[in-house]
Image (cartoon, rainbow over all chains, first blue to last red; front, top):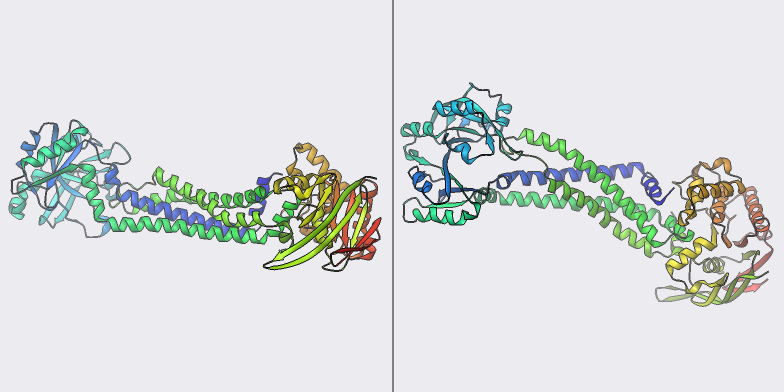
Length: 387
Length: 225
C-alpha cells in the first residue's frame, strides 16, 4: 500500500457521492468545451483568413456595391497579383428554414480559385463551371448535407435579386485543410449581372467586394492605402483591409453574444469549483478524526494536505478527462446539426488545454480550505471530534 | 532499570477565548523502562492530557518532558511527527482504525513512513497480526471485526514500528468484559515478553490491576501512588 492507494480508497468511501461529483464535473467541462467551441467556431473565418489577401468594400458599408470598373484599376496597383470579386446573392432554397440556408455567392470563375487557393476543384469540373453560364460549384459538406451531385439542378428563389434562379452543379470543391469552409455555393457573377439588368438594375455592373491577392503580406498596409487613395474623391469610396480585419468586423457584430458565451463558459468553471469544493469540504470534515489519528501515527500536515489535495485532484481530473472525451462526439454532433452556421466546428487544442488546466486548477482550489483547516488542526482537537 | 519517561514540573493550561483552564499543575513523574503504568482518576482529572503530552501530540504550557533522553517539548511539529512515528505506539479507546482499509492495511499504515522494503513491511505486519491473534483476519475490514478484534488490530498497528513506548488511552473502555480481558492479557504479554513500556489511562480498577504500578490524578495533580 502507498499514500496514493489511500487516496483511491477514500475516493471509493462514498461511491455515489464521488460518482455524482465526477459526473457533475464531466458535464460542466463538456458544457465549457461546447461553449468555447461555439465561440471559436463563430470566429473561425478570422482564424482561417489568409495573410496575403485583402478585401476592398464600399467605405460606407458592406451593403453598398462597388463599380465593376474598379477591377482593372486595382489590378494596376503595385504589389497586387490577382483581383477577384463577388456578390452576396442570398435567395431562398426550398424554404426559409435554417437547415436550407447556405451562402450563395456570385464569383468570377476565372479568378476565384486563384485567390482562394485553400479550395481545390478538379480541372474538368472547373472547366465545366467556367463554360456554362448558370453553373455552380458547391462545397463538399454542402453537397453531402443536401445530396447535391454533379448535374443536379438547384432552384433558388431570389430575394435581393428577384426571380426564380436555376443553377446546375458543375463541380464540388474541397478544402485543402480542416479550417476551410466547405458549405458555400459559388456561381458565375456574369449570370447574376446579366439577369440583374432585368430584375435589379441598381446592381448591374457592380460587385459586392473585391478579393485581392498581394505578392507580399508585409505590403498589406501600403497596398490598402494605395487602393483607397485612388477612390478618395469618387462617389463610391473604398475601404481596403486585410481579410482578417474584414472577417473580424463581421464577428464583432455578434460581440455581445460571444462575450455572453465566454462569460457563461467561465461561470461554468465557477460551478465546477463549488460542486467539488462542497464534496471535498464534506469529506474532509467527516475525516477530521482520521487525519488526527494519522498525525498521531507520525504523518505530517504535509501528508494530510496531500491526501485531501490528491482526492480533490483525482476527482477533478477524472471528471475533466471524461468531460473532454465526451465533448468530442457532442461537438461532432452539434456541428453536423448546424453545418452552414458553423462550417468548422471542432474543439480547438486551446479549448482542450483550457478545460484540462481548469480541471486541475479547480481540483487544487477546492482542496485549499479543507487542506488548510486539516493541516492547522491540533491533534487533540481532532481526536475529540465525533466522526 | 533506567528512566524512560521523565516528566518535570509540567503545567498545562488550556485557553478557551479569554478563559484559562488549568488542567495539569506542576506534575513530575518518572517512568522506568519496561514499566507498565496505569494512570487513574476521575473525568477531567487531566490523565488523558498527561498521556497526550507524554506521547507528543500536545505541548505543555511549562515544564519539560524527556522520553529516552529527548526533550519533546522542544521539537517542532515535523520533528515531533517523525519522533512519534519512531517512538510512540498509540492505542485509542475507540480503536480509530481507518474504515476503508483492511486490518492488514491499517497495521501497515505507520510503516508507510519508514524506508522498509515491501517484503520487510509484509513480514512485520504478518508477525504482529500473528502476535495479536488475527493472522486469519488480515483481509477483513474494520466493519467485519468485533470491537475486541478491532482493538487488537489497533494494538498491532501501535507496535508494528517497534516503538519505545506504548500509550493506551482507555484501551478497554469500549469493550465488553471478555474482550477487555483479552486486550489486557495482550498488553501484559507485550510488556513481559516484548519488553514494551506501557502507560495506560483507565477508569477501570480491574484494568489498572493488570499494571505494575498505578498512579492517581485528581484535579491536575498526582495524589497517590
